[in-house]
Length: 603
Ligand SMILES: Nc1nc2c(ncn2[C@@H]2O[C@H](COP(=O)(O)OP(=O)(O)OP(=O)(O)O)[C@@H](O)[C@H]2O)c(=O)[nH]1
Image 1 (cartoon, rainbow, N blue to C red):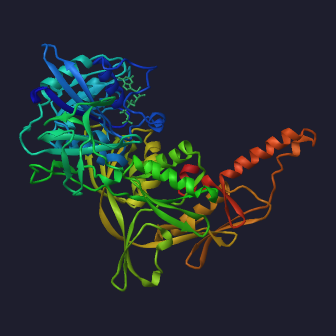
Image 2 (image 1 turned 45 degrees about the vertical axis):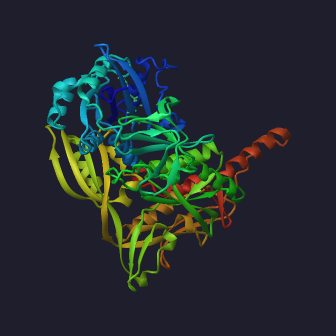
């Protein structure tokens, strides 16, 4: 296919505005595949958890052959992008491999924070942006309001807007025409040196790492020797081709193409997304711009509930890592919990997804310790430490000062929720840097806040006080000085190291009280009295007591039916599997994460 008739585009949108549904309609209309199953079984989102949570985590690509109204054949490369704040870098990689973007706006919701954030990303990469109003079939669709926002808030031409219902397929035909008409063809010559951008990858147990790439110039052929310009690694291409739900071998990719190659790469950690691939023969002199290393921002340790499961847990994490280069881990051990792994995640959603996958796909009961951000600790002796594990926090005497990561948060909300949102941001130590009225109904709030404050429950609380209307997006902007203390939790006088947290000093008292109350609710009564205490240094700052009790589950069985009795005991054992023995006290799994929730959530 001539480069003039190729179009590379992505769909960008706020979460739930219908990206995956629209992608399905595209594929279906192109008769590449027929619709399968009832609405909601989306073709591009293929992980179970993605389906259940309705979010896209890994981006995917697909090549769609399309015959335009004038009879001309086109090759459309669609790249699906993830929608959650944790995965912004994945969006940026996908975007940089396209010339155009469909900016999807839910007709009943209008422009939201990530619509704007994604538009800025697309503009940074000079993409042609086509505004698309989706869900026009909904009775609550407000098209004039959306058009006003497209013009006023986004600064895009409302006359270019396409109107679709991804659900019914209405308007999708005209959207195709708009794509071939308005999105520019890729540029680049097959004769120049090879420059291919790696925008994603996945691991196939039979074929190894499959690299997803976009060619900006040159050609890539099976048998070619190639080099990754940032990592300096050299490989030989074993196969290359395009994505059509499955991999379709072509043997050659040309300038402008989006496709895959396989080159005997063993693990996903051997490649860097954003890296440039070039040829050993006739190599490019400069890599493509925009390379960035993705760094984890949340750290937590994972321990098996049953220490015999340690090896299985290791295997599970290794398997997950195969397809998730952003998951980092190393061995860890805790006095209370035994051997485990210290892991780094892109955000809390990433952490929860990993937790669910370990439990569901590998059937393991695990405990996560209190998640933490990474602090910079400046010592009096001039040393600088990077601390993400509360247990490694040095003695206060030796510390000069500490710094914590800050974010810039962008919140867009209908005006009536501004008051409570400002109070929430203040409570989270936020400092307002801007407040812009986008129109008479909506306000954009910009805050600088400590990352640690927003990680855990900020998003949920923002959604609940604004009845779901406020939207939120953030980026890490750097480090600022802070005053930290380590809050330790003692259960029957034994410190439970997995429950230790680094907290802002002024919040330590209230946090200590809250954690003890939370644990009191979460830890079931046992045969003896349990004291739960919060301590800073040697000082106890809070205390709760759980009185003794033994739940005799067999009491109801009148002694007679032994099999029923056994069943009940087994059930109780099953329940225990989700408990972790700490000293002589059983702590249920959920207690470890519950301590992060604030009192407001409890009510
Ligand atoms: N009524 C109506 N519902 C739609 C339409 N398009 C999508 N939906 C529904 O909106 C919800 C979100 O759609 P998705 O396609 O999963 O949204 P998404 O933007 O891909 O979400 P992420 O992948 O998480 O970013 C689903 O329940 C869809 O069925 C539409 O045109 N009309």
